[in-house]
Image 1 (spheres, each protein chain N blue to C red):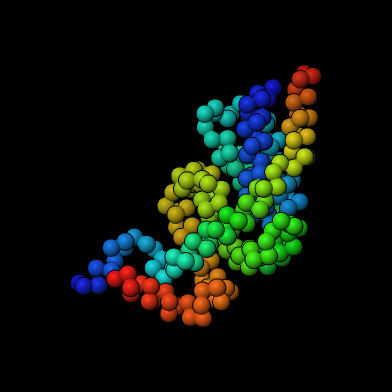
Image 2 (spheres, rainbow over the protein chains, first blue to last red):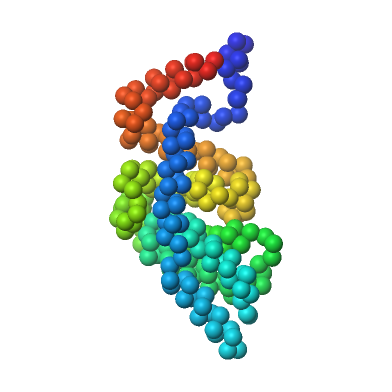
Length: 59
Length: 183
């Protein structure tokens, strides 16, 4: 059928998904995630690993 | 157990992303940091089972996720934590660096079913492949793909309503026009 011409990338499960929104979703998802990642390693975790090291050294 | 400096570095390097994942699971920074701490203690107690040369980050994510789900099941019986309160804790996230325009997105993200949100974050933000994500979540690659697709579709629905202004007054019409012009 003629309709098939427009269905070449037919594996797309979400035909209504606008590419613009899709890329905006990707950007915002990474932005939300990176906001936290950029806070780095809080001191409590550096201290935790340091304490564990000391403890194992004593043994 | 003595912690090899290179392993220690690898563990520390994974912490920022591990925290971001934990916050996305818990919706609460304090609880997320406790979860990360418990994860690190478990990881270090079992560091011998870590296979060198494999992905430290994926290993830690797997431990964190398993721990979260076993704890969450326990706590759910104690406190009935519906989607609503998850969204509330996300909204109140004390994050000065967070940009305001991301708030709507955060709220939309909070409305996703947990398994979809988790898959989307692992694939779309944490930098894991579908295969790695499937290992972390202990399910088939196809399941992850379908969760990610459903998450994206749902977010697109939520965002086309909530941020319609960004895309013009009649986004649906534009979407149709874009499709037709591609024919």
